[in-house]
Length: 311
Image (cartoon, rainbow, N blue to C red):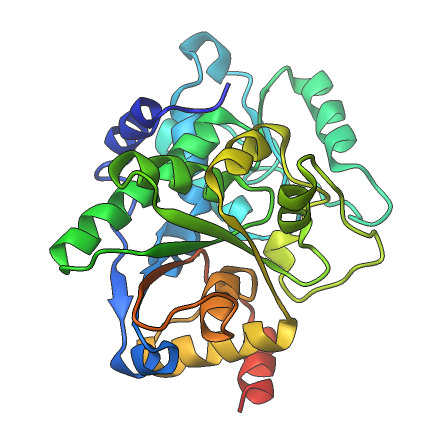
């Protein structure tokens, strides 16, 4: 069952004093580029450098006491922030992490099934599976960002016209959309994805979940899910106004602008929402647009490549 606004508010309370209240940044240069106000929610400044800490912590905090001794199993499409998020969450919760923290199990995304790998670990350990996005507790934790955005907009005297959210499996998008539309009914919200992994955008048009071409490739390694989550798509299909798609080159340009103008390091997957706004994927002239920069876990070589490409 999808989390309700009440579930997300409870998640905020669990995260209070644990998660970082990340800033909502603004640059006059970027405002001029888009012809309106552009506000960037800076989740690269979150613990472990990614929004994923929020969902992992909230889900783990709800594991029953009599189940905690058996540990937790988690998997990811590749963003190593997930490993850090789980490790930090498990440490704070006093839990042992079977997959990302104490024992790391790698797999080949193109030839192996990560769920099958996780199932084998669960069979051995009897632990609790924490999915990366298709889990109500995880979605609720990510949704805490939405309430923060709404409050920060009020503080900055900004009335958002539209919000763009980075989307892989859809958990961040679903959680934020639920929270934001609870506070601002009818707010226009879009997902943003890299070219070749635009499964949510295409699924929204089709009205049912579609997968990606296994041959597709992108530098946005945090967003390479095979298809939208069942639970997340049920939420996003009701709440989103559409899906936006950007190229790797546009992502690199967004990373460069964030570095130059906001002094913010963003990973490729975390920059797709900003890229969509800067590339003109929707009308921004005279409007206030909020984008979520979801993570900053990029290695030096990739970041250098982005800066060079956008130079």
